Length: 483
Image (tube, rainbow, N blue to C red; front, side, top):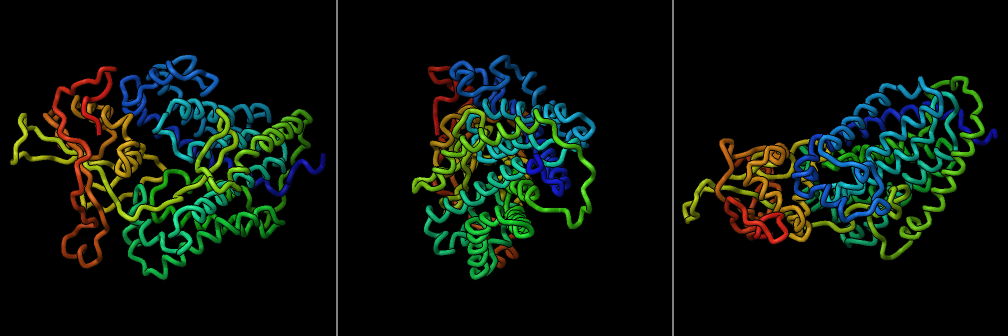
């Protein structure tokens, strides 16, 4: 079938595959380094507890067959190793079927991790990585030209990512329609980056231009992905520029980078790549598989497409247990005030008016007002992100904040490794409390006078002091006092 392949997209496929391997590598490394404290056997939300109440059919994955912390670490590091092999181009030296099998390995491994990740893996970029990784399995290698159908499915995915994000904004917070959301967003986003202070202090007309450009890129440009070249390449290029702007202005894990990877697959690189290398005709079995997968994706796209057209559009929802076709979106509403939960401890056995409280430092989320926010993306600091949600509402922390405090009071090594600063290096504190503060960026004059990037004001208690040893609830988990 002559229509089946696109000879000129051999470099597009190559760039896409190597870039996707990098994202996989980051995701698996983050899972390996953080899982013990979050979802390990002795973690805040242990995987064994989840597996006992979740049937395999609802969340299929390897850990239903066996779970131990050692096995989870093996899965995560094996995923990182396969990602490195794909980054090095090992699939190019394998027969077509073996190359596809190799690309299926990280997808299966990461799907297994997401299925047991619970709230720590409830972010839209987890499903985005799985959906992208699934399609990558069927892109093939140098044994055949890139299949047109899979290239179109990647554009359909990119369209849903961008257009879904644009619609959720227009339908959501009125500040998006008034072009005023970025007056607040750079300051109140989940994890500001080192340039966020500067973005926040751009003139307000610049914020209006930012917002309007975002609307154009997300609501108009995605339709151009389905037009002939070079228009589709220009559209993809505009998306790349917009995503790089977001990379500079904040920390959004690998969401922006994976969107860039998808956009690169829509670019026609033939102008700089020269004539494509000779590639044999694809085997019949490969054509049948790709056509079948395309039909499956189109059928599964019905509910995500209907969601796009719905007035009650949902963000970041999966409609099948394998996360094959999902709906996406971000920041349908914008916080006007930044609240942060500050966790403190004391060595005093008896709390009194003169008790000295010392603050635990987190790696990414704002804490010490003098510390400039740091760049971590595409690496994902899961605890830091959930602390942002906890400040919005204690309901977001109900399942894990108590166990988190309990582990601090036990001086749990794995939990402390997630933090940037432990004020009690010689042993756990006698009490821990949590308080909510209002954070705002200082202005240039305040920064010069105080050296502080943030100004913070106490708002309320989040959790009253909890003593060591921690009283357990009747079910045997977590401290008796909940946030």
